[in-house]
Length: 293
Image (cartoon, rainbow, N blue to C red):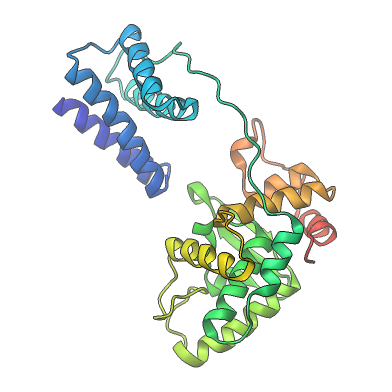
């Protein structure tokens, strides 16, 4: 098992330093693969297809969750693919292993009215209120991931063209437009922030101490603020803004390929990455279809 642990550590290092997986994904992969190791060790089993199927059945009996099984199977299969590429195994024991098909669910969204009502109710007086209004307007205006918006720097913003340079998953860079409403709030926030903190940091969105705001803080602020301002018990989270951004553009007739480019969904491309697109296409579609433009 020591060898397995060393192989697992090497794999996690590969995901972190070569593929740039997020900390949450690294943690999930480690737990899923380690769970398989423990199952094999405790039951004194060999890694073969029959025992793998028994492992999957055991997980299903405990969770009744097809998505969980699919995620764990994918993680472990990927681990053995890594070992195969390094010549540490002769074949991937998970090849040919089927998992239950997961039910496809549409992503949750806020309606345009729900989104507009919430954003319009955020107060615009006081540094933290202005920050919150600027942050959530920008989140909806761009469809950025919470990790992306937390890491935006002043140098990433082109105010004249209203464009943001974003470093997304896998350190892949993309350019995303935003609207005048967000720009006005951003400039107001920058002025108020400078009065209190000066040029303390290059990051745009800060916590009350003047340090870069964390992803978890954004999640907590949104959850608390939405309940306070709307009285709704609806569960909200930053990724809901991303889903809503894409859905609202699509509902208004925006081109799906443009939306994929805005979101940075390079994994949806099987052959080439939208080589015919340019920023004028992005800006034209964005300005025509975004609800708050």
